[in-house]
Length: 258
Image (cartoon, rainbow, N blue to C red):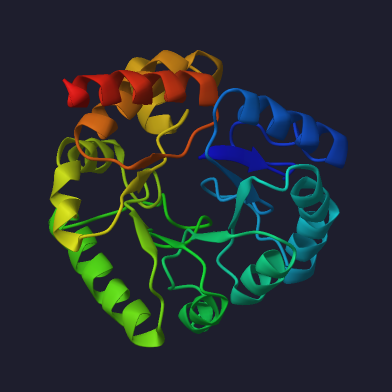
């Protein structure tokens, strides 16, 4: 899954693909590098990001998504939103997947809308929302609490008629450095949920802080983390750098075949 942020303030590439021409060019690049899904985000979810109104999120999305769907009709587009009405608009404009950072916590209508739309749904875990999630996150047992969260939310989603669920542990979303690496080291435990697992490790502070590098020098650490995630059972990598992630996938697939 390749990341397309159509925001002015995302943590890594804010403002880079904020207009239609640049967004289209970046999609073409990711497709040429072997991307399977393109995830469009019209709201920054970095720690302490400013809140964005419904109308602003809708405006940003409608300025970019319809043209991308028209230009790349065979591409699977996901939309990164925690608002059910934005999800409905996005699917109406040609998106075929919803990626919800709140895992259904932010909008009580999300599961109902996803059930009506019948599209795949990424259920991510976060402790708090971007404005508060990195203010001293605490867990008694991070893995047990995440698995309990997903068990409850999956049951609720199924009761609402949601069929196709992917879980994302939410690296960096209400987790400190130790929490993040504990989740990565025990990623195979999510198999108990019997759902595909997506991970978003790309360029995150858990890599920068551990390796003492800036975002521009975090690609090597990202590839190492992504490779570890694949070995631990990740099914989808959500990334900024598609070429390098595709290469990691090819190597792990070759090893598995042997």
